[in-house]
Image (cartoon, rainbow, N blue to C red; front, side, top):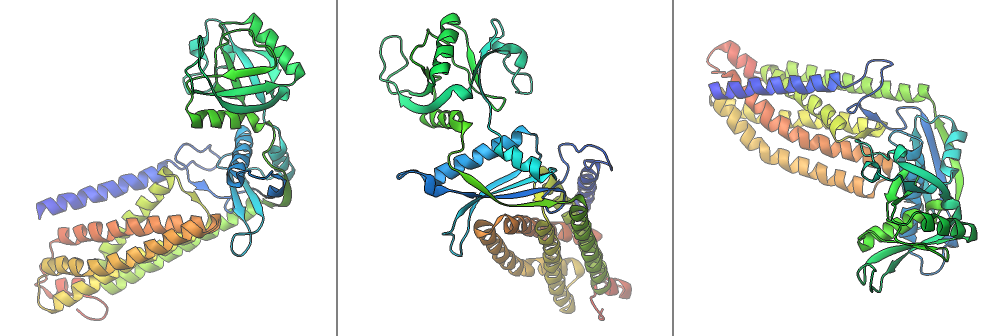
Length: 448
């Protein structure tokens, strides 16, 4: 009994610590958020929602359409990240009843309420630059936090406007060359770029040159010799996938296929705030009503269920911060529904306990038997819910996926809180059930 009570006290302390973490990591009004703040979706805070139609018909025969769309998404995502947008959502979707309609690019930009600014952001051309590493600064091209150290570079004026194309090649090998068959990236310049590149490489042989894309370093090759003809070979012990990714990045100067703006929507601060407040209010009311019912109908076990429910809520909120989960109105709905499922497991357990008590068993034995007999029903029910949630997440849109993710996470956590936390708390009470008052506390409804 002492061991169980120590575990119960430890669970209570753990729940309080988790609750404090959730509370303390949320900024005060007007304060800047930290690492573990709740991440809210576009329907809960102001921002812009843009939908573009992708013209896949413009792609030539034999073009890998999914790859082109992935590249398109990467380009747009890189562009919005360059402007410091927090938690942007960029995804490709296909319309039609059976997913055989037009391809669309959906862009959500929380915090960007000016739609014209958002449209301009998407239309900006990414900046490709070639910068020389200053002599003696080769080991200092990045700062301690991994960002480019701009003081370690000098810009000779060669940018992506001089780039014609980049492609992956495999070397033939030979004296003074890289190993045969090693992937490299060939870069072709226009006439102006060819002249600039020839002068640059001729005057800086032996120095390192970094290739920047949207302010990030994608490669830092060494200049081995003067390069003429407007073609450069970038080698760096690449794997085939790395070389392919680098070539794709270097070609980011233009979108892989045309896009056309179809619709825009601006979510105002008032609308997002009202949706958030409504979701929180619904959650609090639902939690309060459920707790009141459990206390009235199940008495002492109901109180234990409420404590376990508090642990469940604290754990869920902590997971939202740690994973992190981007909360939407649909996600909050999934969370509220999962609270009901968490209580449902306790109801099954308590009803089983009541049957065991009526058969004449002592409370501790009834508690153990009640949990053991209810487990199969709880497990089967929760597995069915998890399967439904996984299907919703796999086939649903982003709105449905937010609901499904929170719902499945809630089901998993509720199984732990119902089976482990509630059981430990009940056993720690050490009820003997000999007095009428004890029987009343362990009874349910209108019966003892």
